[in-house]
Image (cartoon, rainbow, N blue to C red; front, side, top):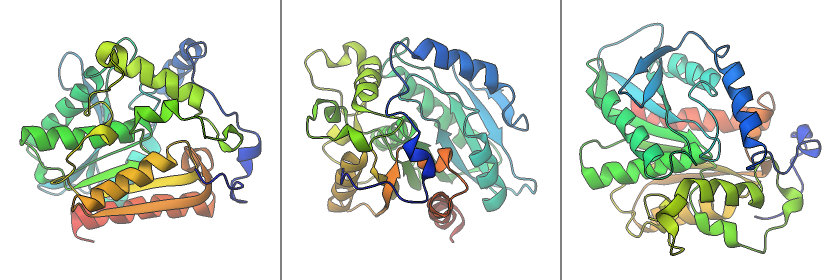
Length: 302
C-alpha cells in the first residue's frame, strides 16, 4: 500500500469502517444477505447445476447463436455473499456486450473450506461451457475480492485440467495471497471495509486444515502458484488504499514475467470495493468502463 489520502471523489471513505466481516458479525451479515437476496434483480434465471451448485443466468435481450459468456464469482471474504449481490453489474454487462453472464452460487467457508468453493466455481464453468448456445472458446472468468481470487484459481485449475481455456481473467481487487495476513508494515488508517482482522478471519476460514503446516495450497492462494505461464490474459484492478494492492501488483508483475498478457489498472486513493460503494463517481465509472472494455476486447474482438 502507498498509504496516500483518499481520492477526493470518494466522500464516503471518511464514514466507512475499517472492518465489517469478523467471526462475531458473520451470522448477522449472513442473515441480512438472506433477507435481501430475493429482492435483487429477479430477472435472472436461477438454474441448478447439481445438488450443491446453482447459477444466476443473465441473458441479453437480443440473443445470438454461440454467445460469448462471463462466469462471475461474487466476493465476501470466502465466508459471505451470494450470486445475487452483483446482479446490477451482471445485467449491465450482459446487455451492453450482448453476452451471457452467469453468477455462481458457491458454498462458503468455514462450513465448506478449500477446495469446495473452488470446485463449485469450476463446476459452474464446465456447465457453462457445455450449454448449446454458448461458445466455449469465448468464455471469461471474473470476480471481485474473494471472487477475484477464486477466478484466478479457476483459471489455474482450468490450465491444470486442460478441459476449458478461458480467454480472460477479470480480477477486481482479488484476494490472492494468505501471506498478507502476517504483514506488520500495513497502516490500518487508510483501510476501509476489509482490514487485516477481516483478512485473517477469511483466510483461516477458507484454508481450514489445509494449511496446518503454514503453507497454503497454491490453488487456494494463487499468489503461491509457481508457474503462471500458459494462463489466459488478465485484467487486474485495485486501489492504492486497498489491503490487496501490493499482492495484486506483485501478481500482475509475475504474470508479465511468465509471458502472460496483463493489464494493471491502479486507482490512486481508492479503497476496497469503492466502485460498489460509490458507483456514481467518475472514478468508479471509469473503473467499470475499463473492465467492460477489457471484456469486450476479449469476447467480442473490441
